[in-house]
Image (cartoon, rainbow, N blue to C red; front, side):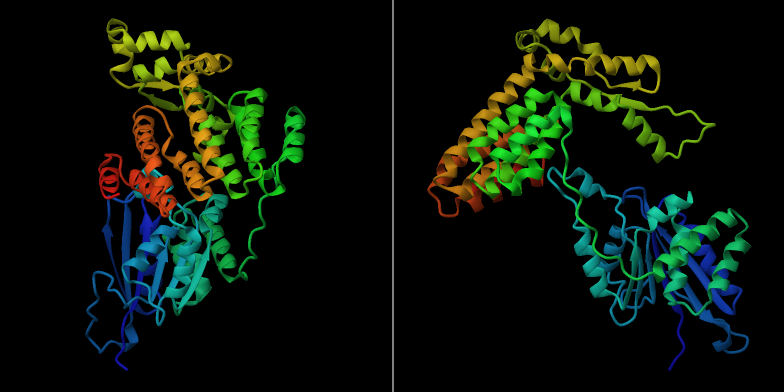
Length: 486
């Protein structure tokens, strides 16, 4: 058989050490009797800029004396021996490009997720199913080595590259020993001990037997403050809905107060015998009742838990100070939303008052919440929570919720499938500002089409398709086309 090069593709994002990993592999080959060549093709349109590093290794012993092999500069679909992906979507991209094949390729991939821009900007839930990605990778590769290598890197306090390097060594896809892999790290001379520790973690994890399926999360337990509501859930609703209802109660008590959470249960009680409809309504009603406004945003941004989370994400040390800058761009509408109903309506209807707020709303501004002044600005807005039930936005949203629930209750007895899709259509109504305005317009258009769908045997399916069209773009053109074809 004609000798050939070993082909390796590394798919990594900016800051993950992909270049270092490629250098280690070149060093590994060159110090152990192989010709080695590496190239890289950067990408700037995927999250933090994904780069494909390509390495070819050819044994010196098989090269005719005085001659060197000609090595390729880019990966070729169907010709890869090893593919290393630093994140699950990168593994999916490798599959999509045909780099992974069941007759040849060992795929080493981390199962953690860094969501792509298309996933982040989707108007609905645009996330790719991680389990399906793993299943596809397992079917496409000759061998799959996967685990959450990012969590191991975080525990080691460094990038993911040495962890992936350890997993690659454990896979035995390359003809080198563990000691030879480790020597290439030592020759690098930078962060050697930390990299060796991370390498060992990746090596051991790759050799470990597959983990058993993760047990489901424990049921939510409502504390003493919400004990009365917990008793109501147990007494008035079927067991299969209890966990969803407890989540909803906890969310709304945190959002407003216990009375608001109790009103949530009052609203759902007419649907208590409706099975799946009740569960979907419990989820979507909790989301709608906890709509986003300036009070909610300010509350979340000034919580101690948020400062602790950010400090953990940037690995803040005792010798460092943390500064958090928030970019705020309130519109007149957001200001009117949190004012008492009459005052908010007056502001929206009074041109000179709107112009007076121009300096505040015309341009965005940066608020440093890690400073006392910036923190107190947002804390003062968050402190308006007790006054929220009198605000313009609260009155509007409660009226809209009541109209939506009335439609659901009416349809539940005559067309349960359509009632279920009316509940699910709530996913269009979210966010605040322009996002909320666009979603609300689309929702209104769906509700206007509802009478024509009630007598259609495909009415539920049709409403589902209309909602999907509304979520597919923010211009409304897809929904226009879908409505025109109905």
